[in-house]
Image (cartoon, rainbow, N blue to C red; front, side, top):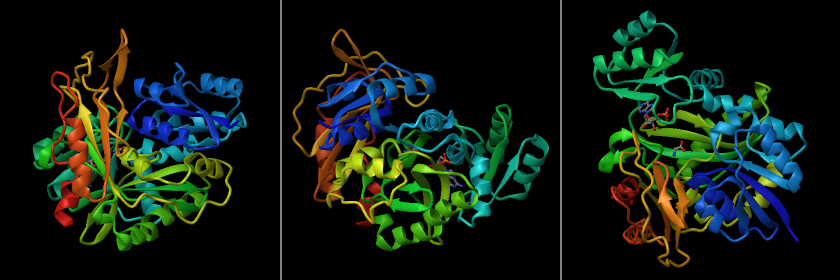
Length: 420
Ligand code: AMP
Ligand code: GLY
């Protein structure tokens, strides 16, 4: 028999979540809202052409289909309260309410939360007016980081090396609303994600994203050009420290603030010589970190997220494939500013075996052909006994895929390789 579940979203993250949910023996059908051509191809998975941010549509569909669990992938439905609406309707849901999603929605809210609960982060100021912001810039050393307060899909952060650049960012971001200016942190970035349910914290394996467009961490910031897990920077000792200094205080802070929370909590960290500091919180899984994480996860994702959605006792630990998984994002020409779309993707029918999985993100179909339809198009993910082997396997699979202007980084995993 089995139950029906629903996954909201259409990116590479959601393809990986749906693929993993479909592997549960408990699950008969996974409905992706709206999903993508990759999810449409998966066994037991089908797409539903609804808007994931339209709470009424989502609730009605979940009722009509007798959905046992809704998993909310991206931040947009969370911040508009789709989680709240599903809970009000009595439908089990994994993903926080809008109040919990404030940690991602507002940088200033997240900074104040961290300050209140003693969570290490860069020193900062919050500004709504030009004068005090420019005074702050004059009083602080370069480089300095200027951030728009609200969601900006990666476009609201400027790491300014020069005063003029910082001033320009202040002027630009203040037009949209409040801003945060913060101390520049040195170190290596890592992603630490946990399941947080009202004070309970269950960590996932560590991972590392590659935010910049070009090799050697050059070029503009993107949503993420590749990721791998595990990562040597989050070894056992550092992971314990992140749990102790960041994740448990955050979960406890939400309880203290009387903010119910059931979902993934993602800490974007800068690991410096002084230890971990939080760059940002997200109230969801990372994209592309999810792709390697789902390749490695052995625990039953449906059972796990249903346990969380019910507020029951979480398991002590999760079961992971000990191998490394590495995901290379294939992006469209012009990404991240003006991605070109509509090009047929060649090579999708190549056979890869069990150690490689091509997750779809910005794809669509036209006359039975899969075409590019967004900035980040595919996430080619491979497992290997070492980081080197996972990397070789992923790039060997990448070599089969083509469209005009395809761009990807050649060095995903480089921090880990340097350390190991
Ligand atoms: P955020 O959206 O806040 O995570 O910022 C996007 C990216 O900007 C991060 O992944 C970092 O690469 C960089 N960044 C943000 N804040 C800082 C900081 N305080 N110091 C250094 N780099 C930062
Ligand atoms: N990979 C970064 C993010 O999902 O925010």
